[in-house]
Structures are given as structure tokens and as C-alpha cells.
Image (tube, rainbow, N blue to C red):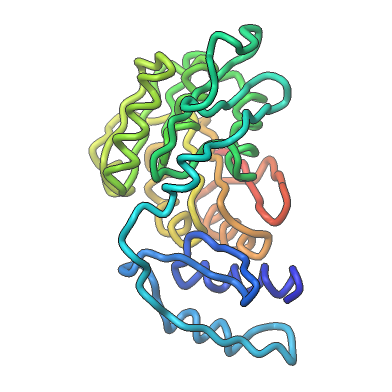
Length: 272
């Protein structure tokens, strides 16, 4: 299966609710939360597939309810250097005393949560944070996973960081990682974007590294809590997803000011 076909299938499966993918010898395996998956959207996308003579077949099955990251967690990950200014290391494997103290070091103890820096989208987001002056800023991390983006923002000078995630284990893991890195100005909440209705205050930087469907659904809430000169950083999507995000941003009075790409993944920076 060509990479182009793979990318297009992943894009339409993302519209149907799939949040992550794995390439196998048999094809592409997509993973979705059962309550967010819409089979009709997938069928319609296959019917209108833009490349001729491509036959797409799929099956749907429940995955076993167990820790799918167990093997990865045991093996860990190698240190990840981002622009020579920030190093993300596996807190289980690395001795912090051996690290270069002239740069920012972030230890991540990942337990079932996305966001160690090994993924292209995480690296693009952190690279963008490094390019901006965060001192005194209020930062919101939507779908925070391990808390890596919020922790990075705090260590780069953010005054206040708020993160939230729909998964309880992510909330616990993000809180754990914040403590591990001595971050005391980060609050992590359990819930989805509706939790933002609790906030009267606004944020200077709002960031979300989630799949396209959730981004499109939640962007109005992101916009509502953005300060007058705020920045919105979005990643977790493909090239084919960009027009939809641009259209939604335009509706919300946001303009694109920067775009990054790493492999098949994309990141966009919007401003008010």
C-alpha cells in the first residue's frame, strides 16, 4: 500500500473518530474510542475515495481491555534532544545527575499516556514553544496526556499552566510528571473541553495535540478562553485535514501565522 493511499485512508478514518494508527503487513490499523467512532462517516469516505482502482476493506473489533503500553513502558525511550535547548528523558532509565545542566531537562514517567517527545507532533509543539517568550504567560494544555507540553511551558517561564484530559490515568500521570520536574504552577483537571466553561480568566497560549475531529469540535471553546492577543497551537493531524481547520479558524476570527511539518504530521499556529 502506497504512503499516499495510507495517508488518505488515515485522514478519512480520522474523520470517523480514529485517534491513532499502526501500519502492519495487512494494512492500516486504526484505534478509536467506541463512543466517538462513526461508521457511517467511514463508509461515506470510502465511497468517495479520490484514487481510482483502490479497494478498501475493513473490519471492526473490540480490543482487549489491558495496558497496551506495558511493553513500551518497560523498554522506555531514548533521550530526545529538541534543538539543542531541551532534552526529554525517560525518568525510569536515565540518571538526572548525568544530564547537561545548561539546557532544560524534562523527565517523563509515561504510564499509558501520549506525549513523551518521541512523536513528531509533540516535537513540533515543543519546538514552537521554544521559539516564543512564555515569561508571565497563562498557558492551557488541552488533552494533556503525560503533561509534557504544559511542563515544558512552565519550565520555559509560563506563569500559570492549566491542563485537562478526558482520561483519569492521564490526569494522574500528568500530575506525577509535573511533581517529578518540580513544576508547581501547573493544575491538571479531569474532563473534556466543556470543563473550560469553569474559567472566567483567559489564556495567552492555548495548545492542543489531538485528532482532527476533536480539534474541530473543541475550537470554539478554545477561542472563548483566548485572550485578545492569544496564540492557538494545534497539531495531531495530516495535510488533508488542514482546509477543515482553516475554515473553522476563519469562522472564529483566527488567522494562520505559521505551519510546520514533520513526516506526515502537521502543526499550525493561529492568532487572534
